[in-house]
Image (cartoon, rainbow, N blue to C red; front, side, top):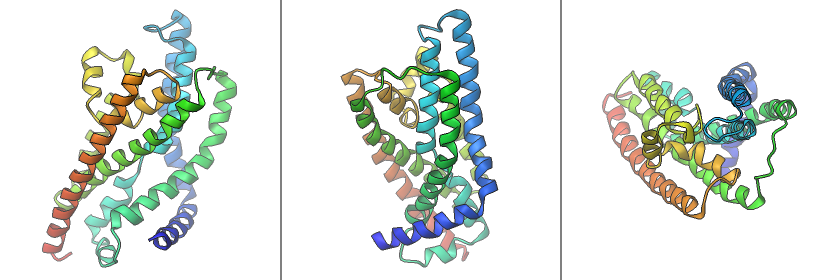
Length: 265
């Protein structure tokens, strides 16, 4: 199995280098919004002194960390897989003795991330010198706690996106469905604004949804903003949603492939 993944990595890594312009567009897409949020909220905090107790440095460290976490937990599976179902090119992958989504599509996403991070690092360094954030609250233990949480967030996000992408077996409107999912993620993940600034109702709902696992929870772990109880609660929520995501994806995929085969694609 290791040899299979290594070969898939070699193929997908080489493929990513062939689409450098596309890669730059995706990188700009991921960077623009957080950088705008960083500039806007920092300016507001500087003019008022703080926003609900959050200082300018709190916003800078939050969004600078968000840029890193989002690069790791995000995925592009909807853009690299849904069309294969719609145009029938998935048929060639289904006859191979590997799972198309959990091998080739997964490695494709990882290769994409590795390349975008290479382009992202210089941008992050420039922002660091522009805003001069104080990361004194970041500790080695906090980073260690955040690493598995970030990986878990990626897996949850990938599997949920993969489940939605697999709805392409039933409908051509899968991109619209995924856009609705993405809108929910913006609201409940803390990407648009730290969840502490959201209404209490939104904060309460977000605690039980998977979206905070992708952004807010890893950020708070890195910045050392969580109590021991909140850390445990976050991991329990993450493991629960990981199990749910696995079950949902398996069910959608298994029934979708049956339907795909039934129409003779």
